[in-house]
Image (cartoon, rainbow, N blue to C red; front, side, top):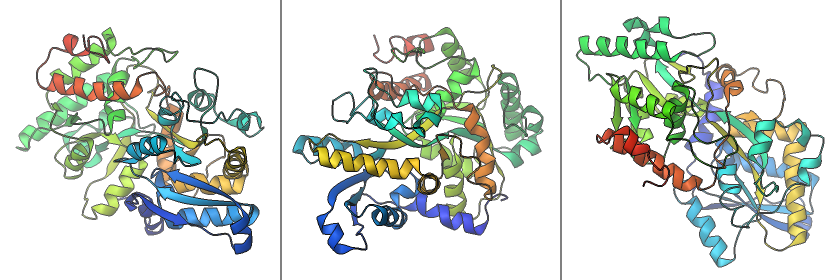
Length: 431
């Protein structure tokens, strides 16, 4: 493999292999007497890179405590298997944390909609907040005008191809290696060439897999479908879903008809990634920079070049599904703790040095122009090419949780032979 030098690998692997579920870390201020008198805050964080790693978080909090000895932060580390359940149970029991690190799809349209979150509009009035990209700002604001997230980082998810297999099959001619993009027409040609190649090699003929066992990794299949013919998943105002559109139906039909592309209701995104890394498929629709690091570290015998790609599109530029992560504050009724929590957010996001550390800990990118904070990191620099392609963040549309479930169930129905027009009808509530 090219790309990953040993130092970067060792630094990033901690972020991806930390399975810290339900573990609590108390990070004390160096001045114990100040800590005992400090305003006590509890931060719950999902595993967003090294924000799921107690050692890395302890280092960042030590710096915060030195500057703000009157505030003391205790951290609990969640995972995506039971994190939502823990939040819901805490709300029922009256034991919500003060701070949470996650994304708008939870903080805005889920917990914000339920009235659990503090309005952070005050934080958005700073000069620094004015530099945050418009599409990020819009995603952090509820339809009622309140802001329930102050963002830290963003990322654009992509797909990946087996570069060696593409070269052997003669399919490299169909991708733009400089921009990591390709057209829908060239995608079709590449799939056909690769399918013929795999057939000749007496392989299983899996060029690409549409995984649909559950919602994990669903950002990949959504972006694949919407990019093919320039469609959307929701309307521009994020009020309704547009899955049952002519262009989406056309894209789904294309994928279903293409020899070598298989809808697999029995496979999750993790299964599809595993097939790709075992060279049992030529492309993977669920990918990002963290995935490449994880798979490289976990599979030192990986003997082909992974080449990240934007999703094929009929438009001038692709529109990738983005991720946004930031801080929110739960309303526990204490003005003192809310003020202290806002101080914490300001420290982590307004000052360049701690903000750069906070972003680098996520292994993603800043939500405002900070230049190339990964200047000496070849892998992160390579993947930074995708950030300008980040499309509309529509995960704040009402009934988002229902829509996510409906999406993978829709794909599974198509894989089981349901007519596409019938499968998409009434999405996300089947008629």
